[in-house]
Length: 536
Image (cartoon, helix red, strand yellow):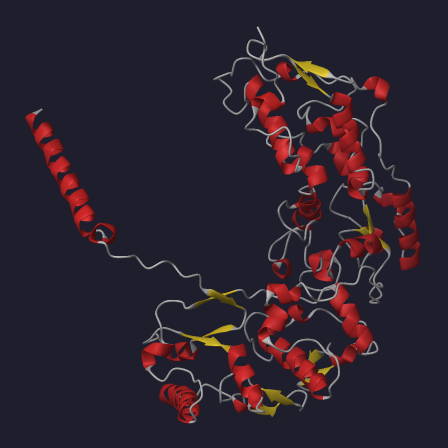
């Protein structure tokens, strides 16, 4: 006991000394003004010069280089990219290709590369300073700084279908100006008509064998093309860092509302199958019925083919087999179609749409919703395999898939007004408040109105009572679903910790729905917005 008291006294003394030290030596107490934090500049042209990494561990911090600031300074002196970047003939195309490395084509020896940077960078800065002009740093520590002096606002940019169409139109649909493949035999690039794909299918994050990195390929092809057109005093896209990668500048890029369909011999309608090569054995290893797929409609919903065709513009089953294989990274066809939280899968993409305000009240709110059942599976898997056995021609398959989709019923309405109570009285807190008059029918009608033009909702709400399950989440769709108290006890059931009590269920359900749907009132912090106080 005595030892415990002594220990507590010792801890108290240490804490007291620490607090006193802080008060005595604090800048505020000493009257020293603390330096306010200065907001760092945001730029999209930041390049971290770490070229010496190829030779081992860096001896000094990387250099933060502002590319656009330098190009603008050079432009004032009628100089361009060739001032810093060398060019050599591309071994595949024969065209001059500018190196993205500084003042060299290859990384040779450590000292040689270091001298290239120091002699040229410092030499240029010194020359400008001698001319009595504003110049860059000359000392080591002014370039190799351990702390950031600017922050990056860089954002990647992609070729969505709007931008792609604008390029295609400007080039008079000469796809060969951008698209190419590599011939392993001749070691040359060539144009393969009707096999065009996104640059990302071949050009990865880093240079691999005979394929340069995507960043390098994009700067060589896109930037050089834009620079050549600008040199002719013609209108072209940007060729500066911020022109492509600054978010505010990206927002200025014209977006076409109606983009003509890309011509790539893609199907209008098709069946999702596990065997594309042998039509008579379609889905030989699965009992599931076939899925008719409206390819043309899905093109309109997405900005790029890569949303679904993330590795190549081919059938999903080419990479994702029933068992999974190396080409598909072990992801089976079933997983590729049904994995949640993955944009490339059907389920994942559809669920991402549920986050929209009109849908989020039912799909994203707190309570656990009705799990998918066999009825929802049949919404997609609707055509028996026997119906397409022997189908060989694509036109015939297209017609059958189109007809199958046309036979699907879109559920755009719910029950009639007579079947929906106009109001529901909630008197759970009647000891403190007046009963809440819930405008039940108005809520249901509002939910239905918000999704009446949503094709995804109309096709997948397979019963008139589906919208009711947004609140009555663990009961079958029905005109007269059970009351909340049927599941949520009053008070809270300690033996079922994952099921809230009745009061918590009401508040979480209502407030969460209002929040995700962007409904301002009733506000969660004001009880009387819903509950009128009792006057007696």
